[in-house]
Length: 177
Image 1 (tube, rainbow, N blue to C red):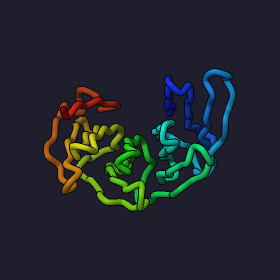
Image 2 (cartoon, rainbow, N blue to C red):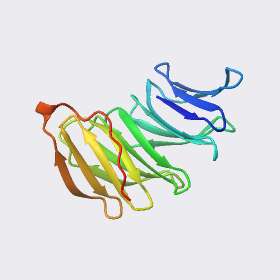
Image 3 (cartoon, rainbow, N blue to C red):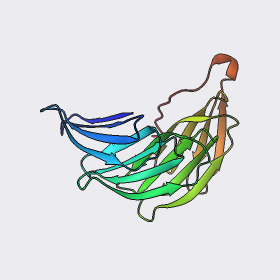
């Protein structure tokens, strides 16, 4: 996974070697290495303005990072499978992770607590998108469907089924406006 801030000329990368790396895109140098995951890092969201990131990986955890001090602020456990994708809003202090355990988890990044466990997919959940202001999320899965979630009461508002015969849902984009 890679996150880029074109304005600040910074990038962050997640790697199979269990690390995250921060990059200076002007000088083409590594600014630092973040260590803590115990296996491959698969998912990454970073905000270079607020100097925070969240990552998830094969070790079934989500980790919250301080990009200035290069330290891990918290380890969020609860998934029973690899964390495949993440969505985060650091201003709202919230994140959503999806996993190959077929579920999503909602995390409070201030208290480092799981505030919701969203279940309904029958296969690996591989993609997510959220609007934390509107308290809505969408997830996509190998089960061939999208699910729309209400993050206020952690319920599924509906299911959009394309069927597995048409292929897995691998990525998605949503606009709740």
